[in-house]
Length: 322
Figure (cartoon, rainbow, N blue to C red):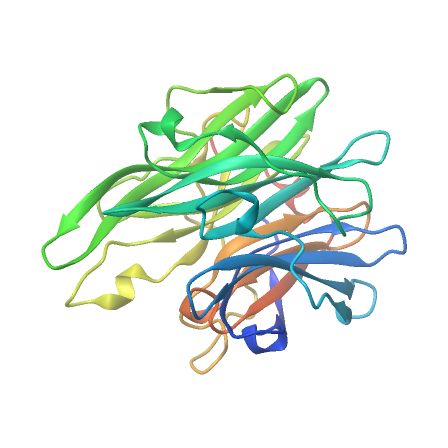
């Protein structure tokens, strides 16, 4: 069995950012030349608009925060009519240029649409280029696609992303969406071919949504962490709370949930910032440094974003599920 994660604490709360923000969501990070990690979050304000802010933390000093950017690094204003934007992953080219992927949201009654875009940066993420939509909602029957995790394997680009399947109406209430994880490939990071099936499917109606895949690979196969929730229920509202799950695959195309995995060695207890919910994970593996997992806590990020760690290479000691 893999080593469980050790919860290390909360890093940032919505009120730590300038402005009137109520949620921090979709954290991810990249390494800087000075050894710090630049962590980006999608911060949602009182008007329900989301911008991307960043802050720097030191992984060698218990993730002590060195700097919080006072201005957003990406805005929904880059997209005509969009209300929210989030970034989900970043890759570096051999020349040092960064290519990021993210999602932009448009309110399109009765629900909303989200499409996946890419942009680049030449200054470690201080500034990003204008976006290029690479996977529009129209490629998913008009339903949202988001949270792309992109990795390169030689000349092949691979993306694992959240794809909505349907909206289930609820009279007089918001609809209850169903969504899972799909996989796509590309030769250039711009033109993507989607697999026909699901990379990680819901197993029953007790599983309503799987979101925010983050994937690493090693000699044994592929490891994914993501978030799972149950259906909306008036009689049992706790069902809709996200929790972290692990899945594995031999080839990265089809994953199976690891129902035996223990997520945390020190699980949260009532009153903790992440007891009721853990969601939107991002996994960073860097050399011999301990693996780092960023994730969001209670209230879909109202309680902020925090982190966990596990020994470097601790997922190399087991075989993936079939």
